[in-house]
Length: 329
Image 1 (cartoon, rainbow, N blue to C red):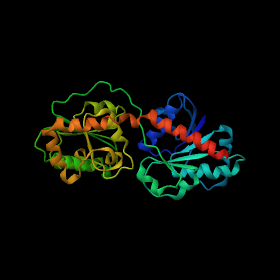
Image 2 (spheres, rainbow, N blue to C red):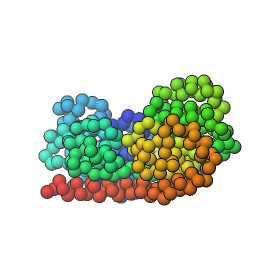
Image 3 (cartoon, helix red, strand yellow):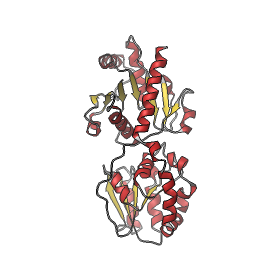
Image 4 (spheres, rainbow, N blue to C red):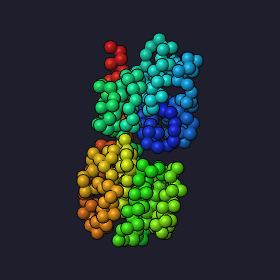
C-alpha cells in the first residue's frame, strides 16, 4: 500500500510524535511518503520518503490547490492520512483537480470542535469521548508509542521525581512545585521540557527557596531512560486530549500519578489520581507507603501492550484497507 501522511508542522509535540512513529512503523511493510516541514526529517527512518510541503499557504488559492493536485498525481497514493484540520481542507479541495478520488482519513488529536472533519472520508478519535464532536461514522484508535530500551539509568540519593511536558501553565508544573514546597521529606524534582512559562516557573522556585531541589533540564530525546530512573513521575496537566506522557510512564516509570485527564483519567485507579488541592497530602502518603502505590501502578502497567506502536499501526492499516474498499463501491 502507498500511504501519504500529511502533517502541518507546529512543534515536536504529541501530534508530531504520533505521526513520526506511524510513518516509521508503517514504512517497515508499506511505501510511506510524508508531506511536512523539513524540521521533522531528523526524526524519520530512512525508509520514509519525505517531501517538503508548506501547509501554511492559502488553502483557498486555486493555483496552490492545482499545484498540490499535480503533486498528488505524481505520488499516486492509495490513501491520504491528514493530521491537522488545515491539511484536511487542502487535501480535499486539491482533489477538485483530479479525475480519480483519493480517500482521506483524518485523526483528531485535540478536543476543539471543528466542522472540517466532515471533509474527510473517515475521522479517527484518539479517545472515546472525542466521538461526540466528530461525524457519526468515526472510529476510535488510541495513540501508541515506539518503545526504546532505556540506556544508562540516573542515580539520585533522595526521592527522585520527574515532570515532563511543555513549560506552559496548563501543564501544571507550578502545582507540583507548590505542593513539593510543603512535603515532609527530602526530594529532587527534575522538569523536562521547553516553553514560554519557563521564567515564571524559575521565579516560583526561587520564591519558595527550592533552587537546590528543583532543576530545569530542557528537552531530552531519551525521556524513557529518565523515567526509568525516577521514583515517581507526576502528570499535573489541567487538560490533555490524550496525554502521550502517560503512555511513556506506563512503559518506563515505576510509579505515575496524574490528574484526571486524557487517557490517565480513563485507565488509572482513583488511588493514582490527584487534584492540585490534595497533591501535598498525596505525595506525603506516597513517600510513606511507596510499595502500596507501586503495586497499584503495576496493574496499570499490565495494559501497556494496548498502547504499542505495533497495535496502533495495525488498527490504522485495517482502517485504511476498509476505507479504500468502501470508496470503490
